[in-house]
Length: 447
Image (tube, rainbow, N blue to C red):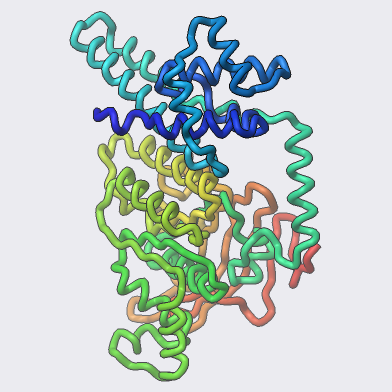
């Protein structure tokens, strides 16, 4: 591994000189950085001495640091002059992130060499090597310190958030665009993993594109990873939903209302919608593309993945383990980037063979990990789909249920709405009803 990706001495000097220039920065920096995160030994000793002076409530200036390092026999005049010659920086966060990344790379590089040595010498059993790797990885990921907070700081932070919400005209959640569903889950929150589960042709993608169209109308950024349909077909569905044009007409190149259609075209062009359409992609590659897009485009607030069954998995024998890793990582991405992740998944075939075709949580394929990681699970259901004749189509508009089978922060229940098959969209019925576990409510007021 090249040394250029293992450290940056100028970054280290910039951070340390910033502390000397403004010692009040030390506490926030010390939360993220430890002495070993610096590459140059002198910089490690200097940061360690800063921590000691801070603990003793002594000045953290050049003279005190020089004196402390001389006593330890660790002072380096040239290294100190190099450091003091750097202009102090005001925004330290990017430097901290990069230095932490360098530190982890060095640790991983060291670990890889140790693994190679153990394997070549045969001094450790495979179980011993695996145990060592696990322990060392836990040590490398040592950011737990900035996640350990006293309850008083958590309460203060929570009250600040509550007061901010109370003073604002906007709610922290974003409407799904379906009122009956909002009345159960309130809407989408950043950091949430929302799972949509259904059998083929029941409306997974239709619900996802319905949500996307509603979000785009509110000018929210959406990253839509379509692993089954082409990006052109997803665009066609969005046009049908937003322009009130029948999908069958659009497929034949027919537009009934050109003015509205052209207006929606302009709206889509100006929207912050990013479509990804690579098929049979491993999750490791998709994750890389997603994180790159979210870092590049800070306005993306939603990530839609259609659907998990179309990812390329390594070994069918360990499918449940791999799916668990996917949902765990997606939840982590939601929290890291402050986005809502909407993940689509198929239900088991057994739901079609039961007398009662209404889906439940246990019908989700490899349901254990998905159910555990998801904040909200929605199972769209159309009873009319199962009552069709051999040559009979469903009506243009049918009743549909949004079964909220899991809601981590609220009630579960069934949201009544309608499915308009010609436009492949879900919409509110004129007078919608919400069935809760404890009864029914109509048009529930906000609290």
